[in-house]
Length: 384
Ligand SMILES: *Cc1c(COP(=O)(O)O)cnc(C)c1O
Image (cartoon, rainbow, N blue to C red; front, side):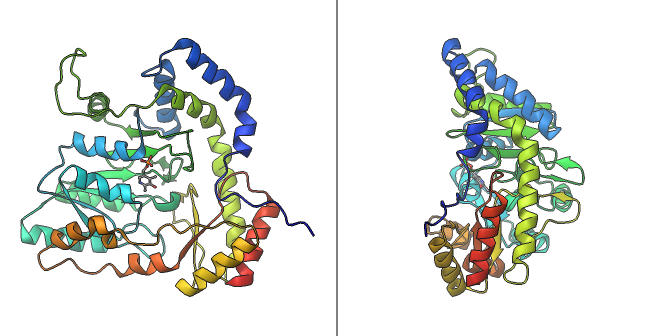
């Protein structure tokens, strides 16, 4: 018996086959035009990204990480500032405040949504305020796996304390909440176009979405070394954070597929949910949210069960991933910052720690076939 072809955790090929001729045409046009930096494709993409999200401005940047950094630089975040963010997220969310000299304050997450826990956020803001050493400056809400965080609540907390609400939407482009897509929540949203994200390029890329014209201007200035009215006037300290023209051209080919791809992701997530409910913990959306299903992550009993399910899946040609095996406050690079954020050490982060031992991500991309989804379900059910 020949075994069936392995399933991809993320798709790189099926989508490309659909648009390969358009990609070739667009790339040839960039090569002919020769404007590899700030070419017309970048401006065209920015307009289309803003239209897609329904926001006023999009600014293309070099990665999701740089999008976060530019957004924080624009707010003047640095030494003495506390930036509140979930302990259960990708490393970039915490790295940026540290690079800018600010202190990340890790917040626990909700066990059902995997997103920042509002009660724990309030508690940690109060601790930092009571101590008076760091200034609470920003909350980074992460829309983990594509599910929007509780933005109305995050915005309310930020308004109450005079803090900046930054949306790390790197995993969630296309998602929305109460009829508003990400890009219109918080002061700005940071997107990543890393190849495996819901909208991915063929290299590194990112964007900032905002309704604020003032912020969009600042982001454009900061991504170009803080240059002023002329190229040789440096008005503020910036960085080289531009989006390549070639990557913009790739994204212009992919963006028209987005609506159908989001619908396909939702359909696949529903199938997984039906097939796996009762056997493992399955993720769900929240009221009013349009989940982008960037990743489909289940919860199994414990780390031993996870190892068992992973091995069984691998034997059945079903790849899995662990996002994330370690909460950020346990990472060697961040442990000291975490310990020092609150005198005597901050309160524990039990949900983030629990999730890291039990989370498991299944193949998720818009081109999974019914047969592949059924194979994934069967492999997980057999071992769970
Ligand atoms: C991918 C990701 C980033 C960073 O994006 P890059 O484009 O890889 O720099 C930031 N935050 C989260 C939550 C991510 O998943």
